[in-house]
Length: 204
Image 1 (cartoon, one colour):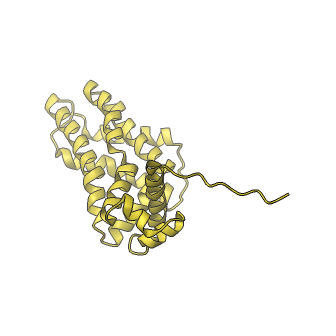
Image 2: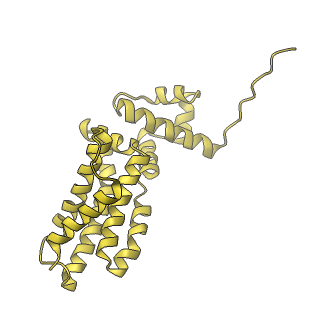
């Protein structure tokens, strides 16, 4: 019998675009931005460099697509809104911490991309900061400011308070996901401890 030919499925434009984003993000997370070329991205997907530029006119456009795919800031803020509206401090902070930890655990690539962009002094670092960190910091700071106005929290700098809580969670994530240090607490217990410690210091 003659050998069976393998028929390769022709990707739609949307599928090819997503393939390029996923491949570029994976290469950037392993080799950095300076160490990855569009030619290498094209070779990894079995296409020409022209195919990459057909979907993304510039490398910057590809960066923006990766940020949009990886940050999911809108989903985080949407998840925090109900507790914020209810002024449920425990739930608001726990949801934030839980989302940050779970998101990084399920997609550690985001953290690697952020570190590479910062260490290389890449312009993408600022885009990451503006699209995710700055908006989340402000959302939490605005919540703290509102609770200060309610008399529930003592007088303090809202942004610094927001950074303090997010910093606790970020350090927990760094130890577990970057340095691979096991936590002596399960995630839910660690989240509860961070929330209690923070609220114990800010409540009026």
